[in-house]
Image 1 (cartoon, rainbow, N blue to C red):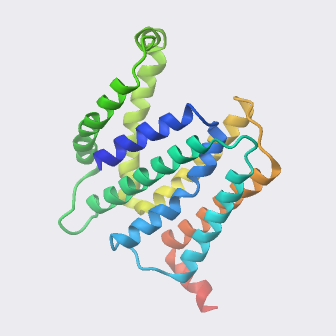
Image 2 (tube, rainbow, N blue to C red):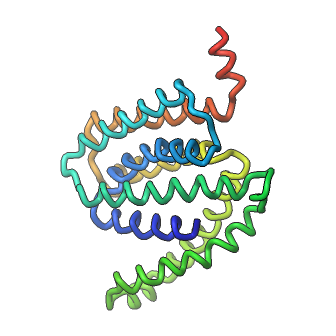
Image 3 (cartoon, rainbow, N blue to C red):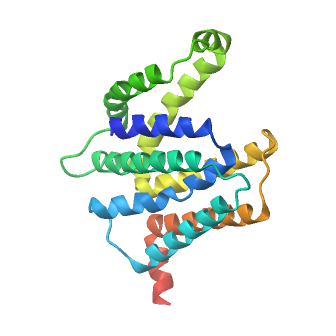
Length: 229
């Protein structure tokens, strides 16, 4: 889990140096498909045709949004796909460890306590590899922002573990939906990034598909009622 988390951070942050924020967020919408495949592989879910159909729609919508990018960054796309692979595996493995029954029982705070230090094993070599002389001066210049970022990163780890514990890996994807919308909106309004109408349609389609899939997972009684009618 620590290895997946560290590799996800390295490749994901590297991608932000190459591609735009809105573009990478659109790529991230396809990650729920990878999460679903891993949940099947680890026996956390049974394959169902209607779920696969919804996820196929999500993948198609995300592909539409990404392909409509005016200046497609292949390196950024590949890095984000790799980050999504490791991030999805981290979510599913965490879901297994935080299962409330069986040998994998563990509380969220203990999970963070054990995983976070181990991630340094993977982050330190990456830091050495990408080190630049200006880092120390920028560290002092933006120390206030970095301190806040550290606090937010800790809170994110705890809330992520709690969300996965009580909502499952799929519920985690639903909780991320509002965050994704906010990031894309901020990228267009604050950073001035431009989105084409096709990208908007693809992104909205991905979000709606994720909402439908997560709703089927969180409220199975509604799904059964619809199928019965």
